[in-house]
Length: 232
Image 1: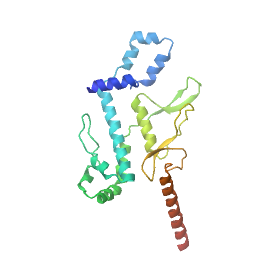
Image 2 (image 1 turned 90 degrees about the vertical axis):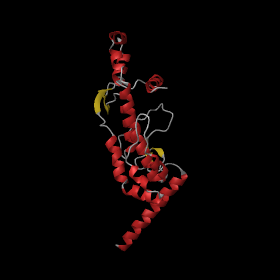
Image 3 (image 1 turned 30 degrees about the vertical axis):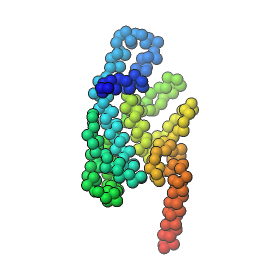
Image 4 (image 1 turned 120 degrees about the vertical axis):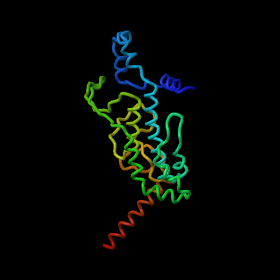
């Protein structure tokens, strides 16, 4: 299947990727037929496949890089770090970990990686586009709300991704009809896996082993502080 066909197939089964808000507003109007006949909907609904592919590559490459950083940092998955260097069909991988491939020894790889982890993490932040906010009136409640300016599915994806990366992010309004657990997405400090955080202080997932590690770390920190206070 060609790239154009793949994009068309995705849009047909999911959602139109661009001009989401204005298209939804047009379709909800009583004079929807006028927009259709005038060609406005066709105009706003037309997009270049190359734009879609470029936007997808930027998002996918950034997320892939961030995910590998988390795997190497918390799971010590050196293989994932070494594998992040390839030439793809439509885009290539991020080159930031290429210099570490010269270290054949896993311990040396991790040692050098950890030394530069803060800078490597900053690379992720530089990939994010500016996220725009604006005021708008909720048509159902008539109230003025401040929200993200969403024009495409990529705006939604980048905002969701940003919430995943951020340690501190704006609260999310809960959808009472949503059947799954809701909250901020965070990486567990013990196992490195993603989990849904339900409080601002939560840093570990609910896995018993991770909770045990959390308690052990708290005990060590408490003992360390007590020892330092005794010396003083």
